[in-house]
Length: 297
Ligand code: ASP
Image (tube, rainbow, N blue to C red):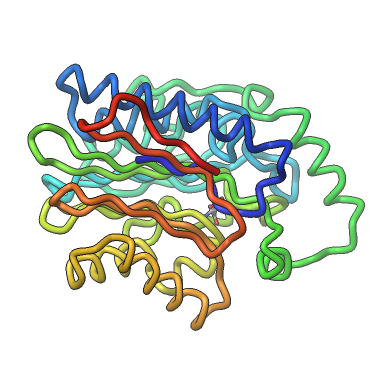
């Protein structure tokens, strides 16, 4: 199951969001059907979404206040509770690959900034130039932000207008192992060094074979305050119903923080659910009973 952000996605961007989600699910599903693990499927799905300019992850990400791109990502293996994350990394083409390398090749969970880039070089994760990540669309958005009177992200999010194109994926493999991952460029015009919910285990991502897997998107500053992914996970264990758990977590988010966002979730029994309190969320899923993925925005 995949999400490609929850916000007021304009009509003229719906088609490309659907296509991006569809391509990513197809890649992840191919991985699973060839006997790949849920971690493989989540990694591949997110790698494809990061390479797609449509989304705020990898290439196409939002530019920060000083014109740089800083990326966040995380991945969690529900079979072992191992996790890897990167926060505010520059010059990394696919932060999800670096998060996975940290999960598998270090004793740490999260690396940030320059230390994360060093780890990438040490472990053969591809680095790239600034221009490989930045698109004309985001450069134009950044210029527009520079000329504008400062409006806080909170205000824009409250109007449900803040573009929120983070990507996330959850999966269960034939062994019953679940995994979750998230990748984001954060919010437009963010302060350098700002870290969102996406790389924080329990906020943007959570997976445990006992209860299932969760990935979130939306206004990170709000999602972190209610530990969104773990809140959904706990409610899912309580209700056994992902849709109900997501709805309850979204009302906690809205009531306590005024926050907006979207969630995809999967129980250890293989029940899937999604929900959002924004006008739209790009999402899709595929199960072994289906011939083709279902994708919607
Ligand atoms: N949650 C992300 C962040 O705040 C933004 C998004 O979901 O698009 O960094």
